[in-house]
Image (cartoon, rainbow, N blue to C red; front, top):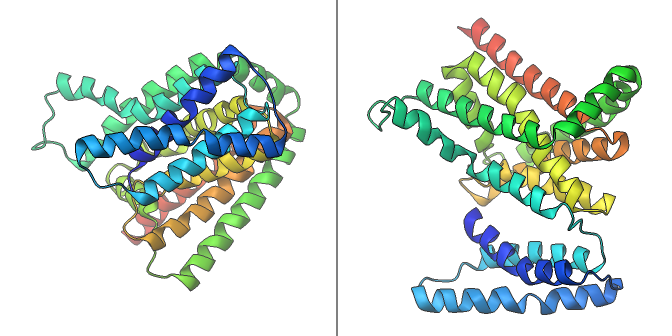
Length: 311
């Protein structure tokens, strides 16, 4: 399964819908929206049919099915008038930056003449720090007003916001722990590839990873998967589910080794869903950023201290 193919199918599939709604926004009933969404799947299917016929590549059924599901869901929401097309471009840019931010690592690679021969795990963590810092600065700039407003509200009503945020985080944490235990019982051969990768980087550069995964990643992920998603999806239920599932999936698809590993979408999605619902209830992006930073930082610090004790 390739995330690039799924996203390509999805983007091609929603293009006609976006063009239609930018020219003439109109909403339909749920049954009509469902039918129209199926009809609009013809376009990406035709495009990819000619793509495979031209290139001679074998169609990847799972990628096309997942791309079709994402495309149908987006179009279904759009036809019901539940997509924020006024903020879609900005949100799409943010999501694209998330996936493309690693390309800025070319700058330090060129400046310091980094090659495969001197690309050590420690150097990789510094490259990650560079690209994450760059992306965080760009996203903070794009959402400066929202963040400033959120911080001021957090200062004013800290006890109330922290209480609400903590409760939703705790529910997500329980869901995460519970699903992890269930996976260990049902499929002990499953692997949390993302956790293994992060742990490996913590072992190499613990304090750099505390900055990257403990502080920068929560800022980046909350703005991308919570704020940008909320601006796109006007239906609270759809926003919470889409944010949680996509957040969970992207923590797995880049590091899976067998299909059992996809079970780890559940714990990540549990936490992602709780952060999304937290944003929906508090209407303050700094609340979910704060709890995400606390969550990640506590886990990384625990890992660092455990490693020190063992050594």
